[in-house]
Image 1 (spheres, rainbow, N blue to C red):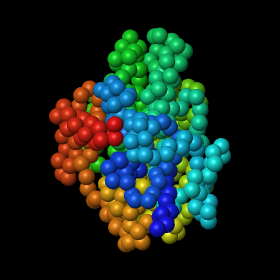
Image 2: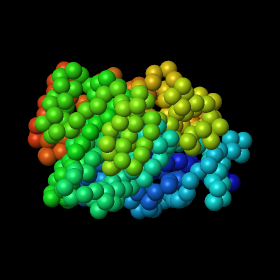
Image 3: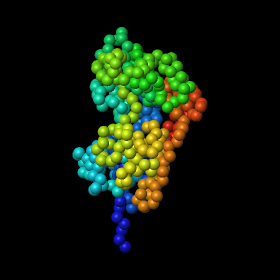
Image 4: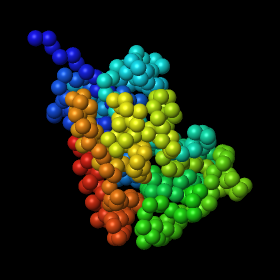
Length: 377
């Protein structure tokens, strides 16, 4: 009897959803298949714990998943490198400095990047992604300006982006600096091109966040669309300026350049166009999960909670496409609990019409986050 030919399942990027495939593979691998993981970094960072790590509530290792042991436990091959495209006819992932990796089924989970920062790359700008290196990069920038700015003057920090990520970074970085550089003064400004903060949150929650920012002396500059970055200031489209020694780029999610190299259909927002099954609209045996895919029929915000809910759908559909069975559809939840880390041991929780800001909210968030990442560590 002839042995069944082994087929290749490949994960391009190990974010929330693709990491779940590795977790499942340890316990119940897909028969007659090999698994290969392609990643730029040796670790995967859980975004939900990044603000807490910034605030000093967690050690960096607590928000990280070491990918080599995870792949080894699953019996998977781990390829470290930057993919530069796909050969759709030969079904291979292409690299500049690595042999092509063949696939029978591919799951793309390369995430997103802050909108606009590629146009304003400057030593004074620190983008929040890649998250694996953000804490180190912000520490290095603060250390550099600490030695350059006169002791009598405050170090001026501007967070570009008025969404949830920008607010969490502003408040948690404050907590970090109060511990690491208590003798220095800092000024914080949140700059947003919009006329409001925390898009997608209810009015009561936004009002609470505005009060928290005011109490923590974080200035908010609305209608400030950055069009120029200099060493000591940011400039807006209408010529206004904000003095800045360190600009943290925390704008809304945009598509990473690699997606344009994959020769797959793109949605209007630049991310890979996918069906509710998470499969590319081109019909290839390719899925896109997490931020990097946009369901054309039902687009939803780019947030980690959606990536987590896609996990069982992807795992089922990997089996189904290899076995020529019907694929299952993912339906994004219309509402979900939001918890923002505000530093100093508190968090703001919003669920349906309720909104709270308290220590117990942070305890709940920490319990959820620790429980989620524990399975991968």
